[in-house]
Length: 182
Image (cartoon, rainbow, N blue to C red; front, top):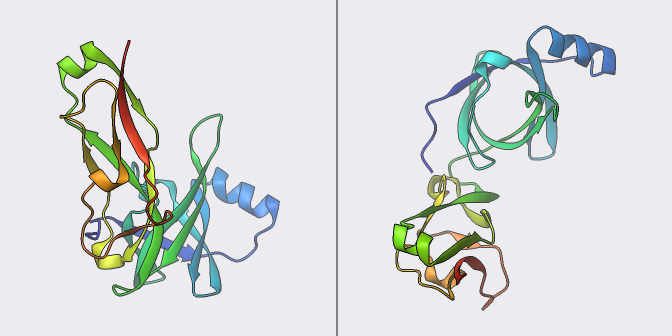
């Protein structure tokens, strides 16, 4: 995966009490955690620095008190009432680290004939993969242009890059999309 051109500036955070975290959020900051091999560090990030539209497989640069680190976004907790982020988890990674994460699927090539012929049904939107950081894809493209009624695309129909392993049982087919004639 290519490194995103996004730099997030973070500061170390001390007190983790409810009141302190509430004040932090009220002042435009979001609490977070930076993990690295069993060590967790409490951090705070400005809302304006937060990446938008990135997934759990996004690789970003985090500058923590002047030290630049490569991180993988692991989790974003969002307030269900206003969709604003309330907590972030990042994992510090090295270029040769093997990463296990969920990578989004990008379905491409749906034609008007396919839309008229039936309904397009997505069975899963992510695949759990394991790959070296340098080979981790931002998304996996799935071409559905040749799909006809009563057909499906399965895991073995998808071409994955070298070094990328899907975390499912051997020989298991995973239905991703289908067109069913109405």
